[in-house]
Length: 255
Image 1 (cartoon, rainbow, N blue to C red):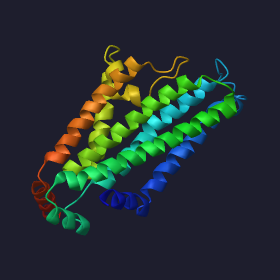
Image 2 (cartoon, rainbow, N blue to C red; image 1 turned 90 degrees about the vertical axis):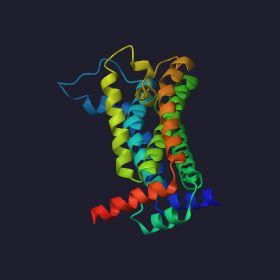
Image 3 (spheres, rainbow, N blue to C red; image 1 turned 30 degrees about the horizontal axis):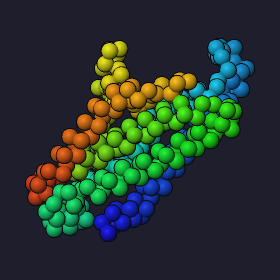
Image 4 (cartoon, one colour; image 1 turned 30 degrees about the vertical axis):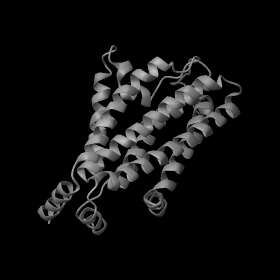
């Protein structure tokens, strides 16, 4: 029953429509852009392509867009769905009647993760289909392995953002924390030895003929899974009354 309520909340607020539409739109546009890029800049005297784009360029273009823009959309929507603010009438209702953070937050986080997973799978399927239609036959297993790793990373990033939003009672703070982590990873990525272990490596994996090996995928997902687990534990173990009192205090201070 609780999960159904959260599902309907995603439908009623149109977060589900927005998320799915974003994945579908970028899946189409990314592949078309990679395919017809030579035609778009073919008459330019300043820009020249070193080679004709192939299936790897198409999938890589989608991976880049999904790893940045779609990841941001997923985190924002998941954080909004999981932030229960003591300054809102609905938030006051939940925080004043619920005593278990697990019952309050876990259904929200799990439904958010499931929605992001479904949207990521749909986007990946469309990207794979468009790749076949535009570039012809290609190693499906290799492309699928890359998209699978990125899909897991997208879900973990959404869970991390949702858990932070639940713990801080603020979607804005959660988005700021996730953005800070992302920027920090970009800075650390300048060290070649650290790059394979960073979450952004799984969020924007490289596309090659061999796909993404299991060992490389595990390295890039381990830190992200650990961070998501810690954030989830913090959200599900903090007393409801403490969170509610903190949010109410902040609301009175803001007034």
